Amino acid sequence: MTGWKVAVVEPYTMQRRGLVQLLTELPGADVVFQGAQVAQLFRWVRSAPQSMRPDAAVLSVSESAGVEAALTSIASLQGVVPRIVIMADARSASLVGRLERAGVAAVISKTDSVDRVWRVFHSLTQPSFVPPGAGGDR
Image 1: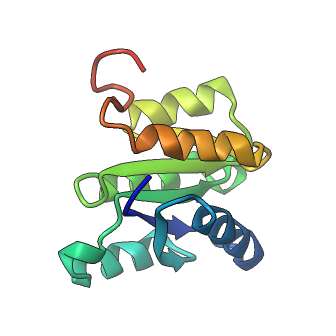
Image 2: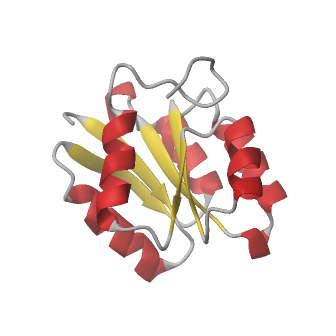
């Protein structure tokens, strides 16, 4: 993984700091933005130089906070951030299906192991990566 720029959106400061720390440990990963709201990321991306724009954004989603709000956020970022990764409270099959149909590249759970999170991000950096819904098998 070389030169991989990541944005992190997580409303809870401690969880955001932990995720940023984990991502900065990935070889070649560079966290270029961290914030509490998707609107902050959207404003930042629009004003950031092209060379600083993220290759992926990690968005925190809580089913209790409303999946519809997450789907709206995903739709607003499509075309702005090439790959969207959702960090959810849990990976229920119905939630993952809805998120993948909305165009997210991957769903990770807040309970996943560090190794699984690294594998997900490594797979996103591969030239052969095909996002869900784009055709082909992964």
